[in-house]
Image (tube, rainbow, N blue to C red; front, side, top):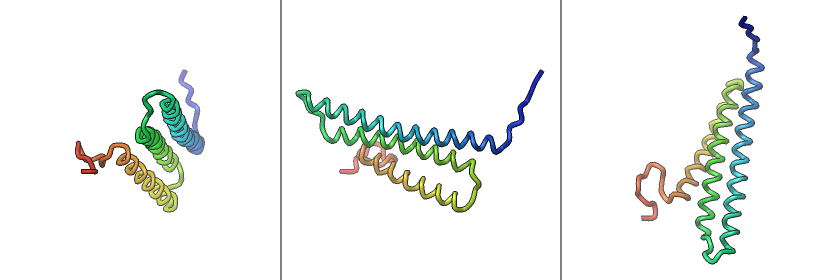
Length: 125
């Protein structure tokens, strides 16, 4: 016997909104954990005979922030898909994604020393 439970579209939207919020929380937690780990490795390395460099700390912090930003963008996109597609929501999402993409690009350049589309070319050359 096959029993189908009818699910209303409003209920699906609520669940998707919960998923979007969960993904955003995961992005924030990713950044926090990454920052704590990077700072912990830096502080513990200061106690060793070979200290860890400040540049490595910046790279580790940048990587954790970059990963968190990517997760936040995914959460924003999912959250916007289920809402009413008004021009205000679409423009709001566009601005958020644009700002986070710019931050991601800036962090990528800071970490790698080159733009993502450059193969082995260094910016500093």
